Image (cartoon, rainbow, N blue to C red; front, side, top):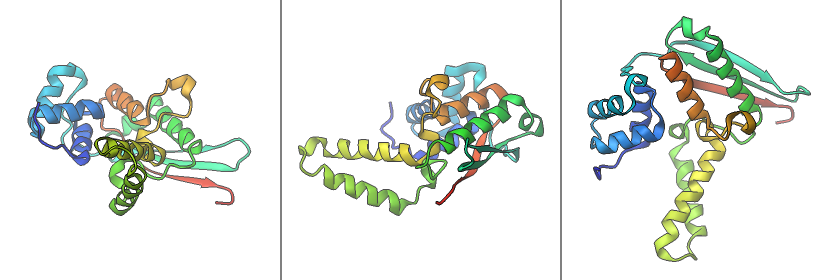
Length: 202
C-alpha cells in the first residue's frame, strides 16, 4: 500500500469516472500511488463489469423533483443529473431523485451536496474548535478526537454522507451509497447537482 496522500477531490473525481464507491476509490488510488488510470484498472479487476471508465462523460440530462412535507411547512427541490434523457426518464432514476428530496426535507441541517463544496475557512474554524475541545485529552489521541468530531460535523451538513432518513427502508445506507447503486444499475454518471430546502419562517 502506497503512502501517497490521496485528496478528497481525487477520490470524488475517480468516483464520478467509474461509479465505484467512495472507499473503493480511495483504496484503489492508494494502491495505485495516486495514478488514476492504474486505479481504474484495479477497480475493474476487483469489481468486474460493474465498473467502467466514464471519462469526461457529462451528466447534462436529468430531472428536477420536489417533495412537500405533510402540512405544507417544508418543501424541497432537487436536481439530479444523468448522461442521457433515456435514463433521466427511467422510473428508478426518478424515484431516486424523489427519495433524495424526501431525505432533504427531513434533514434540516443539510447545507451542501459534497465535502468539496464546504468553504475551506468554515472547515478550518470547526477544526480549531474541536482541537481546542480535545486539548485536555492525552496528546496521542487529540488529533483523532478532533477528526472524529469533524467527521460527525460533515455528516450533519453534507448530503452525500448522511444515512437516508427512512432507516427502515434503507437500513442506514447513505445518500452516497444509494447514488452509487443507481449509477451502477443505469450504467451512467449520476450527479446530485443542487438542492433548495424551504421551511416556513426560515
